[in-house]
Amino acid sequence: MNADYHIHTKLCKHARGEMEEYVEQALRIGLKEIAFTDHIPLPDNFDTAHRMAYHELEGYVNKIQQLQKSYPDIIIKTGIEADFYDGFEDYLYQTLNRFQFDLVIMAVHFVKGWGKSNWAFSYYFPDKSLKQIYSEYLQAVKRGINTGLFNIVGHLDLIKSEDYSVLELNENEVKDILQAAKEQNMAVELNTSGLCKSINEIYPNLNMLPMIAEKDLPITFGSDAHQPERVGFYFNELREDIAVYPSLKYARFENRQINTILQNKIIC
Image (cartoon, rainbow, N blue to C red; front, side):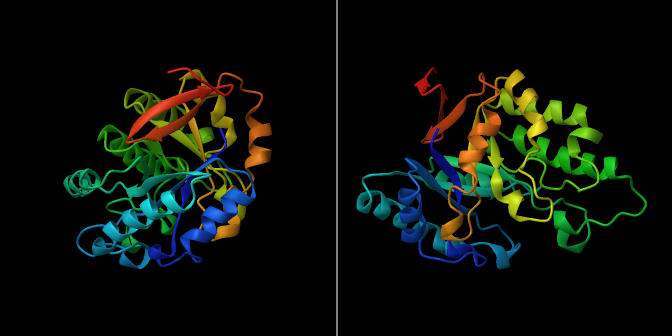
């Protein structure tokens, strides 16, 4: 219940600070557990500007193992943020099984067939409704979940507009996604980085929490920190926000296996 499961490193080329600084910040604010989850390299030189190179993966994992020995007062998990992109499934399967990760966050930053390098944030479809655009994104999320390759649904409504929430326009698809995540024994991330962006809200919108609780889906907290001082950002306030949903469970991962926690007690 006191963990940050989404932390990056400068290997992704758009973060700063040494890994030790992220650990020390976590200790400073009283976190008991963190997971480094930097962006996975992708095949065919896809989006190399925002992720480590494949040959750096082994060093990344080894560095985390070194930190585990150097900082015995905090649990440090070996994680990865892995993009789902249609056609990369075999590559992801092989890469994720090559290393002993504790957890894998699924992200959809790209939608195949979209313009501007398929980048989800650059969508512009004047001939499509926002509901249809949301639907195309959500269907990509659902396809990713159904691969069974991932442990956590990361920043579920990343594509959301300030004008209309994903839940407001595509409620049934959100329900289908949460059901799929339940069937794959996944957790849903509450990602506080949206509070630092123009959208100025958590991913996903907290209006989804009743649905997440109803599906008995566990949650994780993630700061998506790209600089050390962002570790654990807004976690104390978020705990207060979700206190009105006492049935919500927290997820912990080890070797890709999930345990859930309710009121500080491991229940399954």
